[in-house]
Every structure is written in C-alpha cells, then in structure tokens.
Image (cartoon, rainbow, N blue to C red; front, side, top):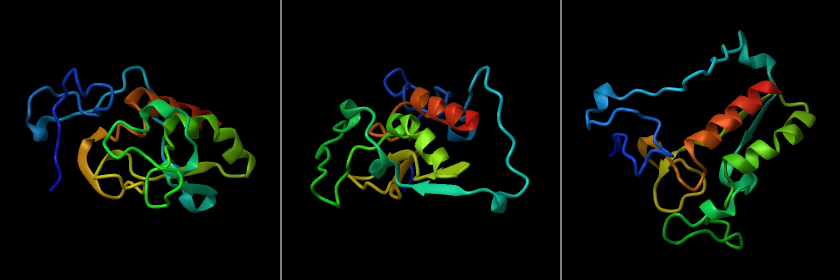
Length: 146
C-alpha cells in the first residue's frame, strides 16, 4: 500500500509535494527558478552509469541513522550510508569514466532498511537517509552541468 504525504513543516526538507491538505489528487511539485533540461532525443546514444545510491558514496554520515536499525557496512544486507551528497561529490569520477548520464536507485521513502530502495512506501517523501530535497536538487543541477 503506497502512501502520500501532505507538506508539513516537519517533512518539508524531504517532501516533493507542496500541497498542505491531505488530498493527493491536488499534490504538486515545484522548483522555483529552475530550467528543466529536455530529454535526449535518443537515450541509446548515451553512456549511462547505473548505481545503487546507498552503495556508492557516503557524503553525509549524519543521515545514516535516521531510522531504527541504522546501517552496518559489515553486513551486505544492511544500508551502507550512500547518499545524494556523496554521489554529487563524485560526479567528476563518473564523467571521467566516459559516462554522460546517471541512473540512480529509487529515491522515495523506503521500507525497513532495504539498501536497494525498491520497497517504496511513500511517493511524495524522499528517503531521509539519502538526503534532503535541496541536496537532490544540487545533485541534479551539478549532473546537468557536466
């Protein structure tokens, strides 16, 4: 069962929705001042680097334990702490490999402690362990500049 969260002060750093009422059919996103990049005419012409965000790079250790059971880099079934900030800091590495696009794992609120992010519970709120909406926006903006 998927959920959808209205915007609140408490979830504002992670919520992609800006509607305050609990009426999902009215939910909307916004990114003031942002110019959206057009999709490439042919994705087959791009070299895409696909990654699991949690496994790539930990840029902000403070967000690793925002839910119970935290993370454990010694256990391959647990989260390892990768996040938007860690990925953003390593965009030049990916570009240096000859890649000109990235495909990251899902970004929304995730069940239990699944590192792969494919157990999404709420499609309006980012998983806090990956970072904030501002951090995701910085990642997107910086990736498009390369």
